[in-house]
Amino acid sequence: MTETLSTVARLRAATASDHDAVDAGFGRYDLSDAGDYRAFLIAHAKALPAVEAWLEGIAGLAPVRSRRDALSADLAALGEAMPAPMTFDVAPSAAAGWGAMYVVEGSRLGGIMLSRSVPEGLPSAYLGAKHLSGEWRALLAAIDAQPADEAWIAEAVAGAKAAFELYRRAPGA
Image (cartoon, rainbow, N blue to C red):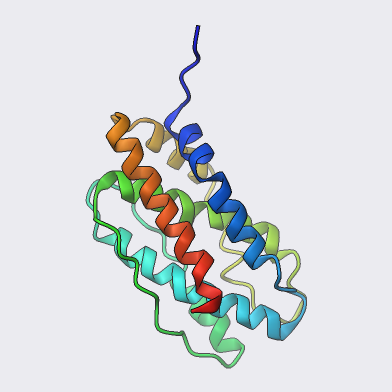
C-alpha cells in the first residue's frame, strides 16, 4: 500500500534543494555585523517586495500580510533606501501563487530564528515579523485543501522554485 503525500509534503520535497541553496547563500552573512546585516536586508529587499506585489495580483489566495514596510523601516534605520525590486516573472495562477506564498511565509519562520542573531541596537522589525497564532498551520492547511491534481502541483512547485530562485539571485543582483 502506497502512502499518498500531502500537497505540502510534495512541495517541500520538490523544493528542498532550492531551500538549501538559499539558506547557504544567505548563511554567509554575519547578522551580528552591521555591514553584513545591511547587505542581508538589501538582498531581501530586492526579492520580497517583488514576490509580495505579484502575490497581491493573484485571485483566490490567502491575503498577503506584507513585511515590506518593516523591511523598509529597518533599512531606513540603517541609512539605506529600499533598492529597486527584482522582477518576479512567473505566469500568474493560483497554484503558482500558493507555491510562492509557501516560500515567502516560510521565510517568516526563518526570520524569527535569524532575528536572535541581530544584536541589540540594530533594527529587526523585518526579521521579527512573526506569524500570528496559527497562521502558518492555516496556510499549510489551505494549500493542502486545494483541489490539486498533478498539473496543479507542478505549477505550485514552479511558483515556489521561482521564488526561491529570486531570493538565491538577490545578493548578487
